Amino acid sequence: MPKLPRWASFVLLPVAAACDGAAYYGIRGVLFVFLLEAGQDPESIGVMLAAAGIVSLIATAVAGGLAIAVGPWVGGALGAAAMALGALALCVMPPETAGLGVLLVSAGHGALRVSVLGAAARAFADFRTEQLRNVVFLGIYGATNLAAALSGAATELTAELAFLCATAFAMGAGAVLAGLGGAVLATREDAEPEEEAPKREGHSHLLVIGGVLLLSALPWITYQGGFGVLSELIREAPGGVSGHRWLFALNPMVVAGVCALLAGVAVVLHVTKVRVPNLVAIGVGFVFVSAGLVTLLGADSIEDGVVLPAVILMSVGEVLVGPLLLSRIAGDLPKRFPTLALAAFFLLSQGPLTLLNAASVLEGADRAIAWVGVLSAGVIGVAFAAAAFPLQRWLAPQTETPAEF
Image (cartoon, one colour):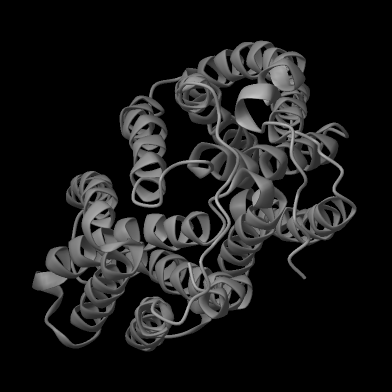
């Protein structure tokens, strides 16, 4: 990739992710009440949202495939356009057409999210720049969570104004992706030839990446059961959701803060050329997630003193796993394929979540899912951390890491 778009990625891709998150979570914050007030019954709303989840995954897969031919920017720009049109439809069209708006928003979010991450991976595809790729992924993940935390302000707006703001945010994200894609095309001929990465022996690194992708899906799926348990404890507490709303905002705020801290650490590691494999951090993160889940499962009520440490442990573990896992899966692949690899992870992890969300209405389902998360995250986390350095010879041959600052 030409150098100008590469370095612009550090700032612009997290901005695009923040716009995506603000639009998507802002819509989600007012959508349910809007649909109820429009005369929709809860059952039909549930069906609509389930269909929207499926459409989002389909759009994610399409964007991953499209990136093979034209790069991630086209799929991202198209996704942003779909989200903007969906939000605008919710704003100006009759409530009876809300289903169309919801489907467009979900499809747009699915395509835009994976395309932003794919663009980050494409900018820093070389294993020698893994820590720089980590910085951008941490920025994207943190910006998305910060937008999610702040999107609660949308509930103070009228639904129409919230949808209109979401339209503007989606258009902003699309402009960033389209601009980056245009910059790549405009500077391609003037770009200096990039030094080729040292050759690996065989394709063992691809097997490692595929194994990480498959093994990490189960604990990442079941991790969500912990938030189901938290919601259960909140519903049973005096005051319900209104009295403990701050707990829902705690996770994204902790995630955003830890992302900023780890991004600084990644910059230091790159400049000093100290190699710490991503799998070490991912393994530790899974262990944190397991510890947080088992601590939360030991709580008898939301007032229990272990709830706050459990949520913080899960949040810190999420940062160590989420962005670094996505960076690891998308790294060291030919430039056409990172977006497709990321789409595969979302399909593997979020596809089953649709079924789990349906099963969560059953009594005790969230706790059962969380216990699976305790075991799978603990075992796979220890395995990843133990295998990190032995596998490193396939992922990163011995070579000098260039300091590109």
